Image (cartoon, rainbow, N blue to C red; front, side, top):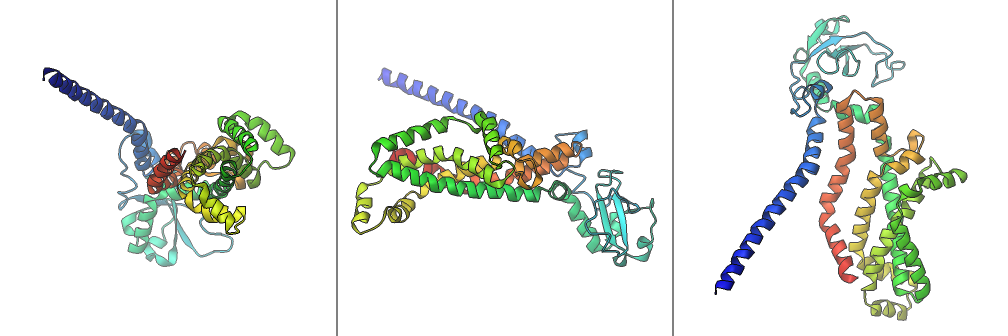
Length: 371
């Protein structure tokens, strides 16, 4: 009886210690990962002046903009026009904010004069007005544009739209071929009758899994330069597929090995070809592995930075992470734009993970159980 009481106390004490350690680890993890993400998101709505004044304060200027002051400026060459001044000659009132990036010709609005009262339309360069003096529709549009100014500026001035498209191309095309070739190799090595060759292939694939692209990036660059595939979408996709295959083959072969041979044999008896058996039996039964490989490979390619930085020299082949880096170096003093660009690059990754985290866990667990 006394011994059981002692064991119960020890168990309770160990449980308390375990819970305490778990909470401490969770708090540390949150502080290191979640807090910076939260700060990055809300700081992307702050002006450069707010970020320089207090980096941890919450955004204020962009949301409380109903009484912002603007100054009328004359047309200039250093302005970024949202229209073509050579073809669109309609008279406009050009105003610049005196509170957000003042005198830098960044926060500028172009308003058609025929939509303004005569007293405002006839203002001269140097004269000032406040946002609440403008008509309601124009005031609402400028107020909304001010809230999202960092994001629209990052998207347009940083040409992130093209980089976003390139990242989608690299991620979708590369992941498709990684999954397709990974399943084919996994099926061949697991269910087809050439054990020695399969062992060699699996060994080579396993060796490839241990090699990181950063370790061989210089030889790769020299090889692809020789065959004129650097700074091309095809060359970058080939490298992504090659280095994504090892993980896909290992997961697929492990999962397919646990599938009953009788299913495939019955398909052969019914006259199915190896490809028909693969597409009709193997692919539907390996959906958990397909989802796992898609998520892991896709997220890795989307976030990859060094390969595209080295291989892509023109704007039409750069991916989003490289675009954010180059955009940040061009606008080193516009911290709000940089943070908005980082949010644009981060949000798709987080959405994919939260939408498919259950499928990812089932795929990894399924592969382990089948193996």
